[in-house]
Structure formats: C-alpha cells, structure tokens
Image (cartoon, rainbow, N blue to C red):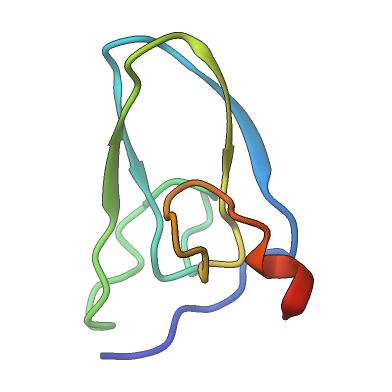
Length: 79
C-alpha cells in the first residue's frame, strides 16, 4: 500500500445534501478533489464513503492524513 499524496495543506469546505453519498479521495491523486475520480487504481488505497445525515457545510481533508477522514482534524498544520 502506498502513502497518499497531499492534495493541499488546507481543508476544502463543501456544502453537502442530506441523504447524499460522497466518495472522498484517499489517495490524493484525484483531479476532482476532495472527491474520487478513480485515480487510486493501483495504489492500494480506496475512496471513503461519506453519507450526509443533514444538509450543512463539511470541511473535507485534503492533506489525506486526518485521523478522522474524510473530515479534517487539523493534521495539515503539522505537515
């Protein structure tokens, strides 16, 4: 399994819709950050599903090192 690529060193705010599923890019290679576009193929990494329970703004991790992935936990501050 390979290490994820840091897509950016700050979270990405996204307005999510209740009941909708989102597939967060775990590898950092997607051109559709913070979501998966299939670029993880061959990396040993897989996207993480996030299902919104309510409509709100969510801060998705883009450094790919959050311990609460796919949600930012501030880990980017120590990279």
